[in-house]
Image (tube, rainbow, N blue to C red; front, top):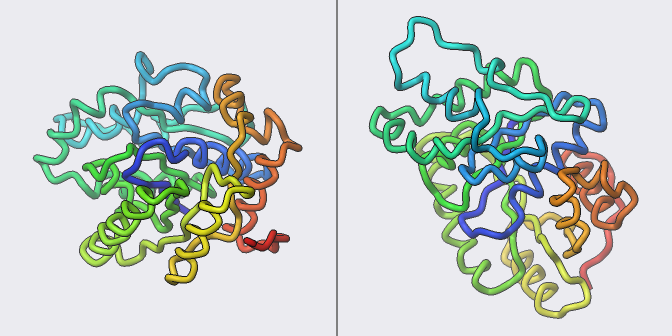
Length: 264
């Protein structure tokens, strides 16, 4: 399964969601790959413990092959790095993505990521794609390459208004490039259960018929501590409430039964 986590709004937790769902997947025995398409490289830093700058064999190097003359292109799996965790791998980001974007777009290479990930899918059970907070060439490539899309949602009115536009953009891309892409759900992230506004916004989105997932991710300093330690929550604080919410979210996406708390 190829999943992209995307929202044009920054600071909504895309990298955290990608890496923590992927880490849970790997901990359950699934060979799991994280593809970091954000030039900032937050997922790369989180999983490898080192910044994306200076890394060799990155997603930028993989994509650059498609616009450079080479007699023999290297296989996509040659750009995959192992993480310190069993079954968890990353195709790391690079700042070079910024410089490469115009060249890829000019040569109409929008489908090359899908080709690469289909090949990688022969060796991985789950692929999670992290994206930049912009609807650019790379995020369009990721949406074209994916089977499912998860949308993190910050519970405020600005995020709500941006969400409507985002859903329209995804609908257009589905019609023109990827009919098989399904919006798997909207994830209420950094959710404050005791505050009335987040509950109200989520209820209103549900009443509008939007696919809000019934598992909500709490706001917690434990996530920032996990980032600083460079360890996903399932390894850093396996019994923490936020970790258990992530586990429930993973189970829900896998079609497993989950005991849910009503939104009141």
